[in-house]
Length: 132
Image (tube, rainbow, N blue to C red):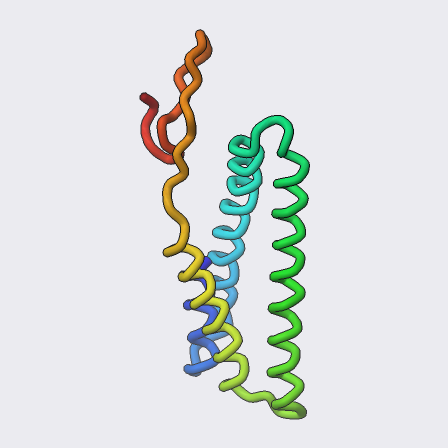
């Protein structure tokens, strides 16, 4: 997502062709599409049987609140710059999105998943690593 937003941001600062910005949005959408179901699956897996509903609803609530907050801040910036927002306002909004995505990437670490001692197939000792 960070890479896609960074590519899309270049349109606000330079005179690049529009297809480059569309490619950036496609990359950002791909990153979002890959991370969203993975995050939901990890939440369900790590929540435990009795907390899955609570953790899932908390995740949905935080996603909704962050989207609403982002739209409110972006809309306020655009309203202050009305009727001609210009490249600077769009650049600031897109750059802020890329910075937030990068901070999210840096804040995430590996999640330790407890291994099950059963006759089932081996479970990973860490998400994203090889099977132990």
